[in-house]
Image (cartoon, rainbow over all chains, first blue to last red; front, side, top):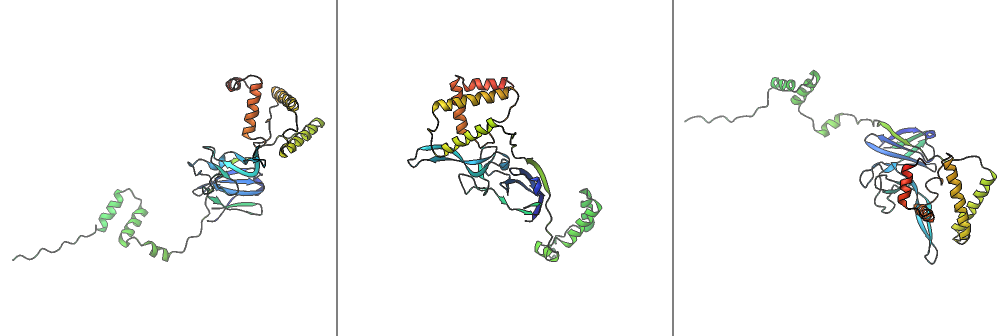
Amino acid sequence: MAEQFIGKLSEFSDGDRQILRIGEDEIGVFRHEGEFYAYSNFCLHQGGPACEGLTIANVEERLRPDKTSMGLHFTNDMNFVCPWHGYEYDMKTGCHVKDKKVKLRKYDVVTRGNDVYVVA
Amino acid sequence: MSSPEPARVKRSTPAPRRAAAASDAGMSGQDKANFIKAMMDGVKPKAAAGAKTKPAAVKPKKVVLLRKIPAPVRVTRPSNPASDEALALAAALEAKLAAGDLGALTPQAVQALMRALCRFYSANVGAGDKYPVVEGRMSVTGTDAMIVCGALLKAVDLQVFELGMWQSWSAV
């Protein structure tokens, strides 16, 4: 594993994504709220392009103390969704939102000055 | 008594024949030389081969950008007094909702606001100014959108089928 230069920091606006092939691996690199996250682009469900679908916040139902619903709300946790069959992964961990044992391969992202590297 | 027949020793193919075999396989001159050398020397075990060579330096992998997916573009325009009032009202309603105060607006007030917003948005789209009706994908949940869309269709006695027909036939 070595640091692979993928581009300049200025090339990534917040919310941008890049899909890269590094050696034999296909990797999705996200920039979200100033942080970089990189995961394998192969969905653990059926090998779809996991990093190329919607990015959408987690949805939770808020309840009053008596358990009546206050409706559905978006939380601050961002997810990305495989466009093939809707497998949804946590942006910060790569874990499936429902089953934490299902986890995409994560790659470290290093920024050095204005340069961005993926460790792959 | 006849002398016993000498044991037969299986010999490997002579070198000239090996060269002929390599030639038949369509190899280049260098390939032939390497092939013959390998046959004469034998293939070295991995461990022995590794012991004599220096560990290879980590080569940088080839990085290929397959595609860029930019962040959704936000529609922003200079504000005006009417927009400021609308934004303040929207913020107040969101705060009431977050506090669980679902009775903050009477049904008549909700109906008036919904009517005004529907007509205002529709008039803009009709005039060619077609911006997203809500900002981003996380302004309203899918459930919110379906409840409101369904209620609007029901209010004007339209079916989803008719909506689909209109969307496929119209340019809006």
